[in-house]
Length: 149
Image (cartoon, rainbow, N blue to C red):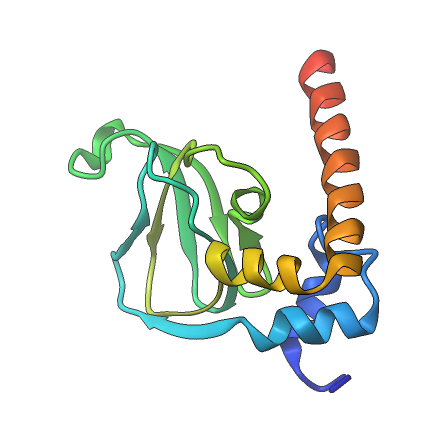
């Protein structure tokens, strides 16, 4: 594994991937692409199908609720920076996006598309098993958090 590749260290911080083997990180990293985005580009909107997860290499992304065309009515959920990730649950669930995402400035973002992830899982049963187990644990944790809040 190329320990100098920044994507490996970021993958280790993503709850869905945190307990995977180094070989699994390499498989995932091979399917990740780096995209450049200008400021104020809508990455996705609430209700869109979840077709990818995003990992910010450089720049900022605003996650918000509300209409893109009426900034005064938007409710900011988070400003994500380099090293942050979002949309990872789209890889393993069939749910639609529950918020909007827009670039704040110029961004470099790693993207793992759901189609690539699904193909990777189909070709690597051990990776599928590891991720399935992690997904179930995360879902249980989210359910517990929802009950507490």
